[in-house]
Image 1 (cartoon, rainbow, N blue to C red):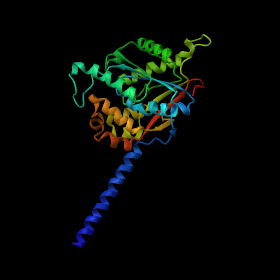
Image 2 (image 1 turned 60 degrees about the vertical axis):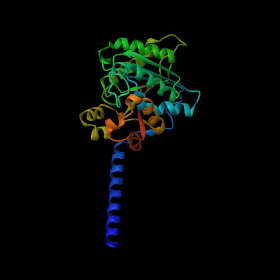
Image 3 (image 1 turned 45 degrees about the vertical axis):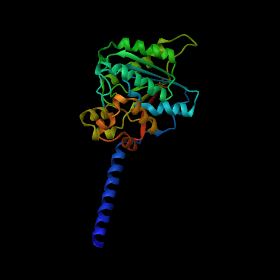
Image 4 (image 1 turned 180 degrees about the vertical axis):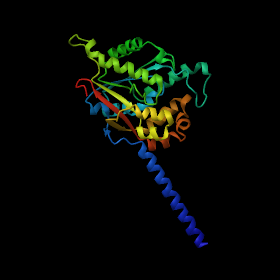
Length: 283
């Protein structure tokens, strides 16, 4: 009996050691050594106004910590979010509504989650979910430009146009439109004393090694078409988990996409990564 206990104890220790090794290996895939960790982007960049430009309801989950930490670090900071589509073509996980009503549901989820994150102003546009690349780029740019003139951000938060964080075509198109407007703004606005566009673009970057190793062909495409991030933020895990509760039609998205519960994913993917460009200095 004593020998059996020793054997079982040894097997348990080996199992725990093996699980720990797997955990730390997988977690290492989600790290980006090039990124300097900061408490908040607005403090780090000495800015008070942030505008996010994204494609779908729940895209804001990728940048949740930027918005939450902006208010934590400076309650007087201003944040705004533009979502280009209502997400009406999305796959429900779980099913919570008639598919024909999904756009209304997801728009409401986006607005509710934005409020929970402390976002001051939100717009959800009516471009076709999955069809943003078919919309004229000039039309998208005119709409984004109008939003920038309205909210006057110092930091533009959006997708890296070549990867879209996940490879989604809508993401890439909105990142391109937002980036082009921001870069053109200073030449378009010449009058002294008017708004001259954002100084910084903060591109959300997904962990390259994780996507390359675990993400199949799409993951490899994303990893190979993203720059090394310059900044990172610790994830606001509880806010992200609350966000998935609010996005009820996508509540099981993480489990379906990654094969593990959201809380476990955020134990491994515990930072948000950004590539920051300074439009004033050209860096």
